[in-house]
Length: 410
Figure (cartoon, rainbow, N blue to C red):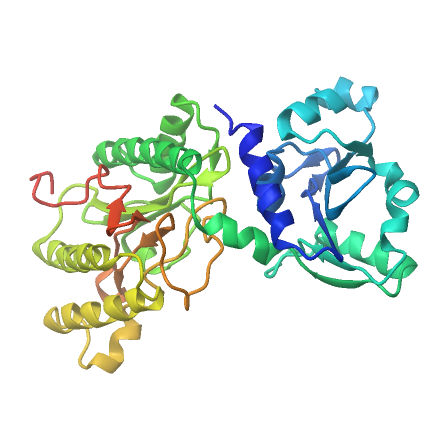
């Protein structure tokens, strides 16, 4: 079941309350990216736009938030006029009624009315807050940049800022409805991991395990993944963002799977490691070392601590374990076998909004993912859980996805 319109209405009201009366927020949707001829890449909505409207379709739209109001309304949504020809080829025409029902916004206008209807909003020295991404690796400009240039060229006195921090503050603490989506995503991801674990002795290639995972997701009615799955056998597991998933699996390989189903925009992010057949004593020893660190860091999560302290703890513990395993000769060498942070925030984006310097608060969801990567042994071990910061400590949302070697299956 989709998140209802009241949720998004509450989030828009919270942003409005945080804005100054001289400001206007303009939040644009993502636009489809062209692939070839009449084909487009799979569409992913801008996270802040989705958070504030609930619209996930590839319909270019524009949300305007005005604290002092405009023509009797503080929120407006602009979208394209219905196109019957496009509907014949691609389906569903969005009408004012359907948009209003999905978003809870009653003040609607069409894209081509932007300058005519809203131009006078920018005729004074206003400040416009846009959802221009802080990190943007795409060669295709985010639509918010086009809006910025359109306003700047006509109204030179207007200044610009970002609406993203206002949305980020809200997104960091998950409502019960958001946690429900994350729990469902985690549940389905867990079944997919079990399917891969069971299939491992029977298949020869990484892509066969990926197919097993995708099958399990779709069997449960989940069509999206939060990110491209990592199915890394043997030495491939030492490459942090390995994504080819096309190599043969050796009979004595351990297989690292880093996967996450996405449910209504909210993504799980789990990593588990299992053998094709059976772990050697050495592989099991490295695995157990990482597992001990994983569990100790999870136990350290609680409200009131500095987020960065978790990474400091993980690095200290992994250094001790690596020294015992003789993977390194001195503590200074730890970055040769552990080279990433132990955690990131999780939510609408897999690497969700949040700062490493901030204090953890109840309602935040983070990952805990220590790892050791040993090139000379063709072995990469990472164990990743998704945990919720609670009033009294922590809840491991992924506790039901097995990771112990004590079951005897290894």
